[in-house]
Length: 304
Length: 277
Image (cartoon, rainbow over all chains, first blue to last red; front, side, top):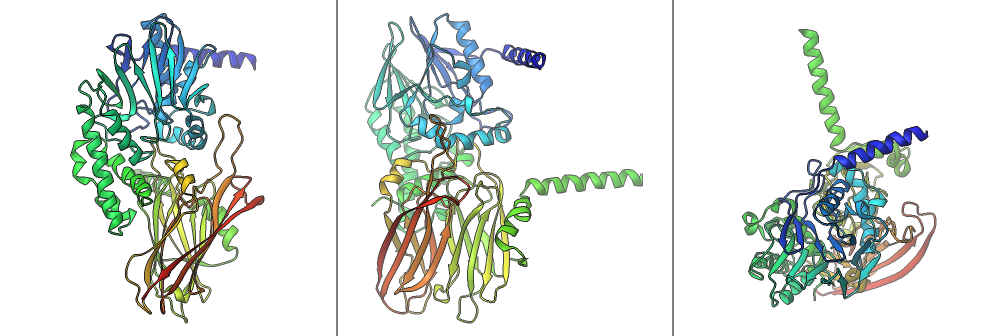
């Protein structure tokens, strides 16, 4: 029995050892990003489809999203170890979606604190079981409750984290992409890690509130940032210009949906007609657009 | 050669039947639901009494629009008495049972449901002569970041109990009028593992609904957690003159996600809507 576990443990560690370090690029001093191509999460890519990375201070590294699979979490950790000897102090989960949290377990050890929006634990609780039960079939990965690590620190409004001569500011946003969106701002380089509050090239995915998302974009549009990092797509160097396609998409989605609701049309009719003129502007349009219309409709029909 | 051919055919057949299984098997229906809900009854599979519309892919598993259309009109002599709906592969397959009356005009019903995974969805109709017919559709669940819970729980909770009626056309005496009933309620499934405490949260959902017009019933329903948050129904009734359309419903909270043995009654709600002709 013991021998079995020994052998099994050996195979596991061999596997972990076989994982190659994730390719990273330094997009601003001390800010490293692994930028993904735009894919629907499937059994080929195992859900490793989001932009993930980390920020290095003099005393601490803060990981921003841990990856879409346990393996990607291991690969990210390996990349960090290759790039810096600075210890990892924080793993920030920008929201509940599996492509941003399934690498969590690789980082779970004493000295590492997991950080999330104050609604992240609830979102993990209400969605976790469903995500886990589908992972084998849809992503061909093994995950269980241990892979979803709930936050040790939760952010209600905002929170400063000191990384050593480098301060980052976390903001818990009102419902937008999801109801648990958390962004990371690096003062040193004026870089804003918006994660899935910003989509570039990849169609914006609505899983929170379309009204909330638009009002958040209107607010953030007024600020100047040197660099803004989306959860999917290329980093934006010309904020707010690089964000405007997303805003236009969401505005059109909201306006056309409202119009149909006023005309007494149904959800089924809305998914057949709303926003289709944007089809060629976005990658993965066919995979997400009808879901976006569905969620927008269900929210906007309660407007009075 | 012949043996090879036969082998090839067998392979093709095996592949085909394997595919059919993947496209929505009837195991849960045959092994569980049929005997649980219709023991000893004969059910004919046909679209002659009711047909079922569902999207082939559930774009958002939390909100899957379903529509049952009746192929016969409701009269005192012949009418559809009851329609049951099931999602075979949901943790709790029973969606609801819906009673119709001659005064319903048409036993059509559109609603939104939760579909957890790839599954057959079925509707069974009972006509007033006691005959049962069944129709079904296969629905592919959407993967990705979707989950069969509402997108914004707090918003749904803030609105809880708010009700809207809408008539999609001008009501005319003696003519079935399409009516929409929207209820704001989070319809919590209780399937949810609490990450911090490892407790399973209780469900809280609308379990009974009655709609009447001038105190005559037009729709009566028993439902469970497969109904989406903010339950939404479209159905018909036949007004004879101006009067009050009334919705009465209750919610319930249950200890176990999939058993209904230990439940506590919740709140009762009433909403009136004046229909003027």
